[in-house]
Image (cartoon, rainbow, N blue to C red; front, side, top):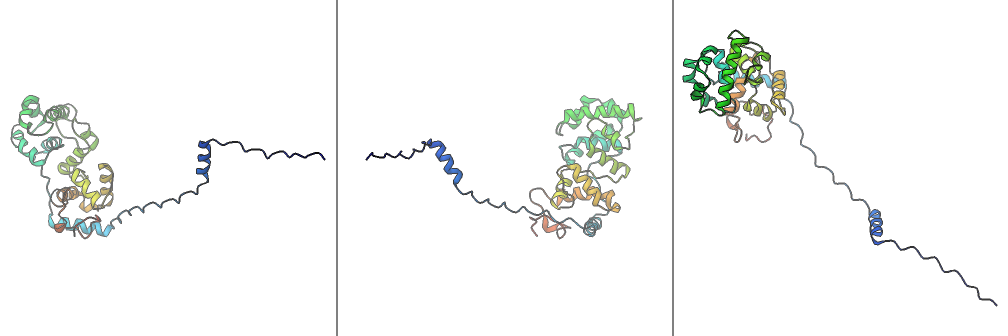
Length: 255
């Protein structure tokens, strides 16, 4: 009887080690996704009643707040604000007291000249650039505005060294406009308290103008500047003496 031979089972092709590992990795069960940490909730916005209460307290404590930059007319106010960029009001006042005694108009400032002006303001940061801007804005006031400080934001911003904050200060303090000048203090207070949070000074400015009642707007920026300068300090806010600590939304307040 003939012997029947069977065909051996075909061998599986060898799988390269790298491919085998990759295939095994694919078969591993997927790791469970770690849930994201819940984000902190945004502070509850101030109600109109709370905003009115806050500014009523500011008004009661200081009915007629004044800016701390010394000046004698709109022109010297404009110059003082331009000089105050990246400088303290006290430092500017120390330099301008003698300056404004001899140069309180654009023409007198031009007659003084840039070199002599530098001597008066050399204790102020960036004094060389600021001296150049003050002489240039004095010349433009004479050539374009009859020697008078203009009364619109766009015209003031067209002057060398003057920006939006400068225009808002001049319009408010010299001409009684309801503007909101946002400096570092107002920016901090608007964000920290939750009164008008914003990523830029313009966002804070527009936010404050939107929520502050018109009856308080003439003095609002002074109240907020003074509050930030003397109470709501950058590094160590004095929450224990704050007029609005019960209304403030800052989660880290100390009272």
